[in-house]
Length: 442
Image (cartoon, rainbow, N blue to C red; front, side, top):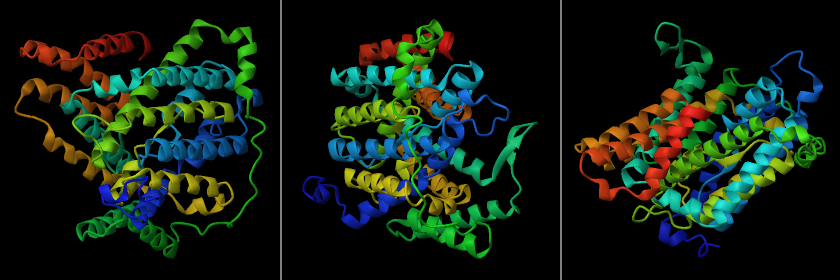
């Protein structure tokens, strides 16, 4: 096992990998609650039952698709990268496609299935790997830093430290609010542990925050330990019913499929590059076994649509596990095992609140922006696309949009500065695609 996962070469151990895998799971466990709420449109009253998915079935589909994706990623790609139904994509599925357009959720699953099959074909031909390896080194660093800023912004929001402000868009929240204070406590504890060099400091910080939250009554003790696993029958295989419906074959569905395809590709590519960079796995601007990692993502998404959930993708929260010591795919196997156990121990997940996960996201953001030091800032033609990539992600609340903006400016600044020969032909293709994306899809 140690030899297969290259423990010695990567300077890791079972303890580090287990802690890393557990940390990743705790950082992304919220998806087990958020995804069913989003896809079933639970917060929308007076909605016809035909437009609602079954909550229990979506919960099981979420856990199983996350486990399947993480297992494949761990065994085949051997990356410390966990997968689950993606945030943003699930909101697009539920609120834009189903609620906004009135499209049956079975048809939405059909769009996810088709876009995932396209991904699988692109991956098997090796084209997806070539596209990712064609991304310039400076932009890869910028993507990692941008995702770091993005998840820090998410952590600051979910903790209540940063809130909406009508005058300035965002502002400082009420720091005396109990749950915000708990998050601030979690940040301080995690900072102390990380500064002292404690391996797994992010994980231990989350555990200490949970315990303190329970002591002060801010986190309720779980209502139970074990619960019955809901039936997945209401959603399993429903994707195929859409293909027999003539109403599925419309130009609207084509646009939906392209949106799923576009956003998932660049969200996944950005996350893969960022986490691999953080773990020190990128060699000579190339990702070892990148094809296997992309294959894992494609298979997970196809299986997720069949099980009954939106697009499955790599999670930026995996960076929390890397910060806790994860370096190999063994950590992904640990995360997968946690998702499978969650099917039975769902009540225990009640203790993993936003006040617990927010400090981890904020601290991990600090670690991820370290890649900024590798960017050649004195070279303006490099600095402009790198900066725009990085800053647009948190401001637009989209990894894909940040990548799009940076990729549009990169060829422009490089050509004007006389560095045309350094631009890969693929970057020109990206330039055209992103221009069309902003005109027609965005």
